[in-house]
Amino acid sequence: MNGNRPRVAIVLFNLGGPDSPEAIRQFLLNLLKDPAILRVPFFVRPFLARKITKARLKPATEAYRVLGGKSPLLEMTRAQAQAIETALPELDAKCFIAMRYWHPFALEAARAVKAWKPDEIVLLPLYPHFSTTTTGSSLTDWRMAAAQAGLVAPTSALCCYPTDPGFIAATLSIVRNTYEAARETLDPSVPLRILFSAHGLPEAIVRGGDPYQFQIEQTVAAVIAAWRRNDLDWKICYQSRATPQKWIEPSTDAEIAQAGRDKTALLVVPIAFVSEHSETLVELDIDYRRLASEVGVPSYFRVPTQQLDTDFIGSLA
Image 1 (cartoon, rainbow, N blue to C red):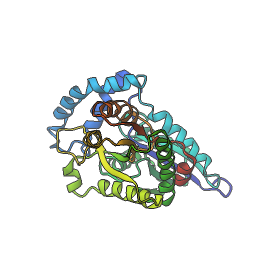
Image 2: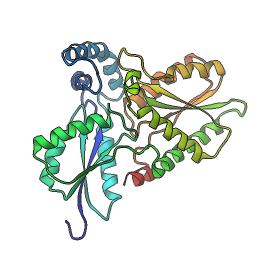
Image 3: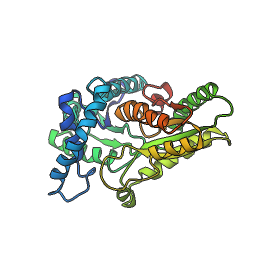
Image 4: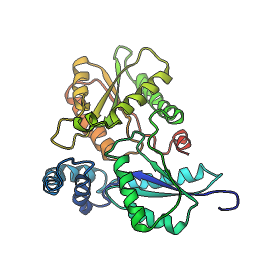
C-alpha cells in the first residue's frame, strides 16, 4: 500500500505488431503457431504456419511499408497506459503491456510486474469482445508467463466489456460525430450506410462456442439503441480473413460491393478495434477505400478508433 492507495498493476493485453521490417516474418509465425489461432493437429501446425507466413509475407511487408516499416500499436498502447494511470488518481496504479505476438511479451511484463511488487493485479484486455483467439489466448499466455516469472499476487481479469455503458457512450459519440460530419458533405439525395466492420473469425470457432460474434452484435445493438434514430441504414460485417477456412459473413468487401450496386455512400466503423493499426490504416483506409471507388460507392468515410478519447479512457478506468 502507498499511503491509503492500493498498489495495483494493470496489465494491458494487446495483439502486438512488428517493430521493424525484419520482424514481420517472425511476428506472422508467432501468430500462426498459436494453437488458438491455427486449430489444426499440433504436428501439422508448424508446417502450415510456415506455408501461410510465406504467402502472407509480401502483402504484410507492403502494408507495414505504408506505415513506416512497423506497427504503430505499441506506441498507442503505451499512450493508453499512461492515460489510464492518470485517470486513476485514487490508486497507486501502474500499467504494464503484455503483447501476444511481439515484444513486449507476457513474460517481460510478468517480470516487470513482479519487480514492482503490487498489492493486486488487474488484467485488462484492449479487446472489448471476448474471443478464445484473442483474450482467451492472452490469458493462457499470461498464466504460463506469471508462473515462469514466479509472480504471485491476487489477480482479477476483465473478460470483456461489449455493452459497458461508458464504452458504448464513448463509441457512440465518435460514430455519431463522424456520421454527422459525413452527412454534411454529402448531397441530401445520396443515402449513407453505416458498416460496422469487425475482425472476422473462422466459422468453426464460432460454432464451437466462441462468443465473439454474439458480443459484436451486442455492441452494435447497444450503440444503435443509444443513438435513438430510426432512420439509420446499418449492417455488421467482417474483415481480415487470414486462413483458408470458411469465415463468418457477410464480409466487409462484399458489403462494399453491395453499396456500389445500391449507390449508397459508406461510413465504416472499426467496431472491434480501439487503436489504429494495419487493419484500419491500410485495410480500411487504403484497400477498402480503393475497392469502394472501383465499385462505384459515391463516397467513403471511416470512423476513427477510440484511442485516447477521454470518455473511452474514462470507461476503461
